[in-house]
Length: 344
Image 1 (cartoon, rainbow, N blue to C red):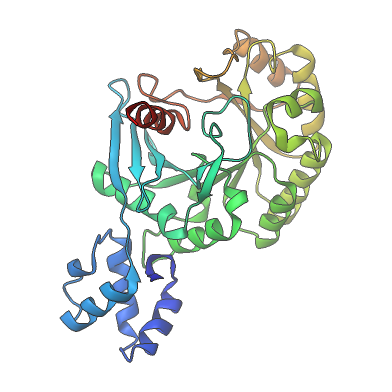
Image 2 (cartoon, helix red, strand yellow):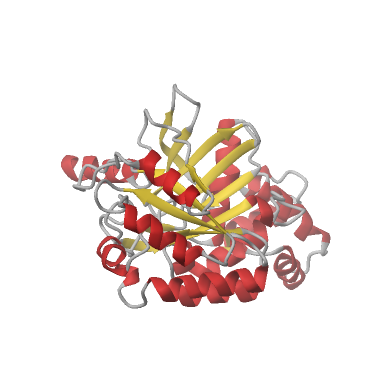
């Protein structure tokens, strides 16, 4: 079966040409797909014979809402989507004064093994297809009844570990015939896959790169993030400098504030040294408690921020949204897996 929603409009045109159909069918179908058509039957301006032919040869697997949580504090919506093969992923819709942001997953599970993250518990199951990445944006908008203006690839999974599918998704979501969200309204978060950062730099996309740093020293970062063990912090910052030089885009550094682990004074000084000479922004993240982890939220967040600012580093504290629901990436999926296991 052909994964028709992962195809560009040019590829669709070639497909319809091979079927003996006029080229304008590609534009019609592309628009239906990107408006959230869940079946070919909905494509009412296509001939019945073509709809039947597509249904017999092409794959459409719209996700189903397995669970939905809505914060009574700020309206944040967290979705647990069930995919066509039964696996589940998470998507979060966050409401800001400048528009609505959707945080999407890039994989089912994750193989990166970061100590503070619920997404990696149980490991990686598989990559998401471009269509499954796109569906999170389209069907979240559709279910919530609210337009999305910004996208963050910071949900379950490591986006650069699924590079080709993520790259295709970015092309699709950027299309003026589809969802039409510009690259400058898209952020991609990585735990620091250096070769893939260099590859992304060569693509010269105008998105915002967010690096999940979480510690400026190798000993701590390697303990928290296994990806650091084969490379090191210096190599990561080298890749970040190359990225800025090639794209001109300032990097955002995500930094989880963990009590007694990442919040020490000397770490603020070391972080400032690493950032000297390269534009960057540090986003301090109050740690969300994960039941399976002994790590605790920092009690020095305010002092750490002030120290960074005194050292010339732009540092802000991420606004906590959805505090009364399963806020951390992977928590809702993890709970679903545990409940299913208990029932079995």
